[in-house]
Length: 264
Image (cartoon, rainbow, N blue to C red; front, side, top):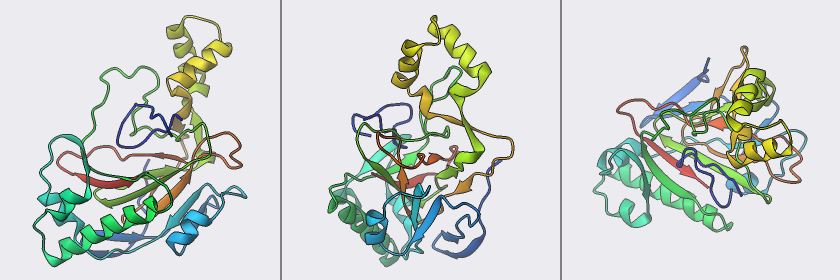
């Protein structure tokens, strides 16, 4: 698979204007929000079982289990000794933290979410993200995770995401985006760098470098936030998928602000 995950910008894995939505409530930094009601591709579900069991069909390519979580995830992040970049966290690291009861409640949620996903033969990773390493000269198509993109797999697979702390992931409506490789000026520059004709070889070149997975928002685009605490399941680009893949990205880094992200 060529599944691009948020925690490894620009690297294919062997398996698989911005608008904040209306705030409703805040608890320990957890902001509840309203789903984009004008976008039928996003569907709200009421439980984990519904999240994993609902088929992507009738154009729906994103499922959101909307939650307001108890616990202080900010305290967990403060207690973690992480440097720049991405640090993956295991249960032993979380259990060893000295935390208040609110911090301990957050840890229990972090571990329980992973247990639920593993029970369905998924492989979740919990990351504390303290900035990304970007390519200095990305060329005409940036391929890091802060660029709007879709995930890709060679077999049926979906992506699960939850941001517990920090800026959340962002989605982009398929109808408000264009593949960067389909922008005439960008394609012309890619062809120049490729040094060959626009044929099957060039198409394969685009696939190999994941250029074909990245999108540019149209002028009228209104991206939406995934929100904090919500567990999402989004469609990937894979053979036989009956719906378009969900376009999303990691939020642009904010100096001094860490993120706590679960991805599978």
